[in-house]
Length: 563
Image: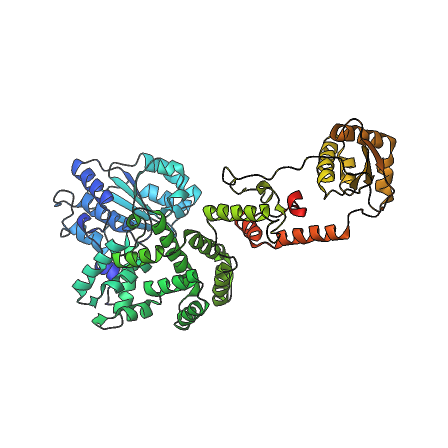
């Protein structure tokens, strides 16, 4: 074919033309000028950043008899042959297709012979990580002590796959991924040479899609220029490349973060109708949300967000209006849905479901707001006698969540007094829900759990009531087993010992018949159940459980509230 693609047409021919890799080109130029070039060099880095190009320039510089300083002349026989790719002294080998040990043995035999025209015989092995382990082992000795006229140059995108024995014998240079502004500037220069007018937005879109690769950006520019027009609009560039514009990605992100169902669905439908890859759209959304989060948390986002100034300002304006916790929640949901998007046969539906999952929880509260609301709830509970009963006392904060406990309440808040154990009136039935009985029964159960857990488990099913004059009765449930266990001689003695510790030395304990009717009035039971249900249904309780990812273990009714 007579047409030469831009990536080959504008391939740099000297160190000064290489884009944004000065840390490599300047070091190599200094080494050439000082005569300190290593016999084995490894170029590592992302695709399309200039590894093979720099290897060819280095080969020309090492064999050029007319070079000026470190730059090759590009006019002598050696330089023109290397540029054309048919030099007899420079061998470009594809590591992927020449990876066997037999081919490395053949290379070892050929290095003995002197170069035909130049001063060095140079071997450029591209994608060297594709060599097999036996091939690497066969190359070790030759690589460590090659003949004086041999130079090895390796290039790879996956340096971690190269054995350490090879890496230790090479001088390594790492190529950097290019920033979007550097790629856009380079593309603008190419367009000027080609006589094509492209606006800055179109160049930025091409540079962004290239992902820091010069070769990829030139291939995309070639595709855009293939339409045959001298002036191409930004919308046409996006249509030709089939990519999502920054404005469209920002609109989708705003609808997603704002919970605007209609706007998001319509924008997604438009993107789908235009034939965009929705998996790529999902990745663009995650990148946009990541940039927003970085802008919110960084003092210098320009160094961390690789975008042109106009797009960066638009994101900064949106970031100022967003709650940080909501942004983190939406980003977390989208990131967790990435496997479903990747594997789904219907990515449009998967993306819509991801949107609805972001709306499945109420807006998150800050810690300060949660503390304030807990204080309000505590005041409501404390003042239940003055107004409508607010709720039962919640379980302690450390019981709401097994992992993250809510912060303590403010200092100085009055804590409700603990009811003192006192003797009930003679003949009065006292349940665990009444003041004296509740306090005594809790202490008896806690003490018994330390001494004999199996008996304590049965006590949890029982009730305690006072018969007056220091006499107490345990009422077991309608279970013959529980009653029999409590009446065993050793268990009765243990119960008497514990009750003497808790209720006083003159306390006497007895076990009632199984299934005795509860002595508490029906009205009191109904009121207690209503308070428990009110506490369970309180919105602040549900909000605290959701924020701390916990669960409600128990609801205890305060004596003051239950009066």
